[in-house]
Amino acid sequence: MDFLKRNCADLPFTKHVIAYRWNKSGANEEARECFRLFDRRDKDVIAFKDIKDVLGNMLDFPVTDHDVEEFINECDPSGSGLVSGKAFIKLYNS
Image (cartoon, rainbow, N blue to C red; front, side, top):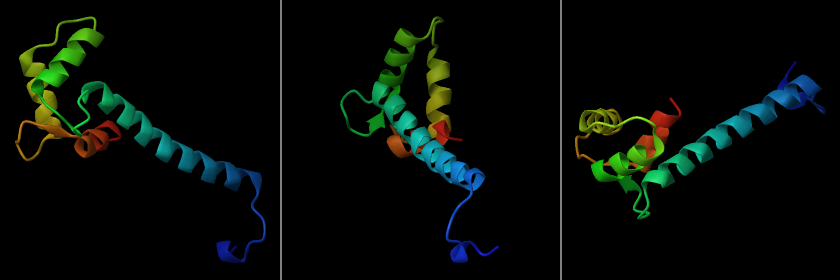
């Protein structure tokens, strides 16, 4: 059936469209909220200290410098030592 010629949508199709759009926007908003935990100065980038401080306060185990460096390397392909909001959200949603 040609979608453009439809004059109604059945329930399964409607549920699919709503779920897809909700999950897509919901996941991005969740990622942005998580990034904001680290980006306390609202600069859209986080540095080593930001990550270490937040993870050290949030996790029940000690976070090593090596852990933070691995996190940054995964989010920072340019090697700047900073994690942008865009890169964080991309990794978060992958």
